[in-house]
Length: 193
Image (cartoon, rainbow, N blue to C red; front, side, top):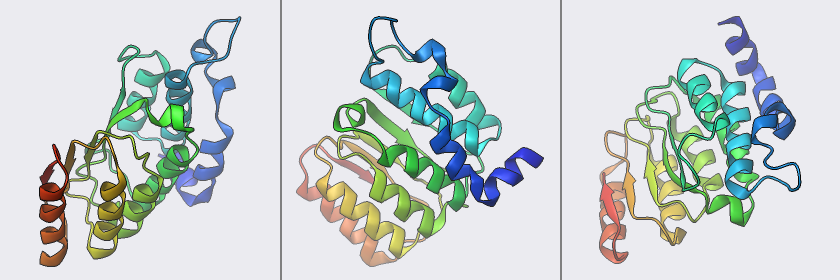
């Protein structure tokens, strides 16, 4: 608990940036080459999750470190992980450093049922999301108009997006209407608001 509180005080971002491939030699790939995009993404997110701390994040980091999920798209589901705005910033930093090839490996992301994320956290995460993400969940995260606007802007430009779940937030009716309109405008997009 003390480690988590210390990390929340501001060094979590620095820790997430400092933890990298050297911390996870098992993910470094074959000795004759560098890690592939999925391995690099796993390393980046595992480092960020360890910096955030907490049982759900540590368990997710361990799954990434051992390569659970095979060589397909990476799915990160951190539902009910007690995440707050500071945690969202650490997570967004890990996402914002993804190359185009690495971004293609992140298929599904859910930070649902973390009401401490709020508007500020959702806005930072939305600005860092890769445009290649196919599924996004931010259900019950205490998001209002500002975060909703950031998520809408991202979703409008996300070419591979197929599902977005944002219900049980604090969106005004106008924002909800815009999410519904987005679902109508984009072919094959399922939106729950």
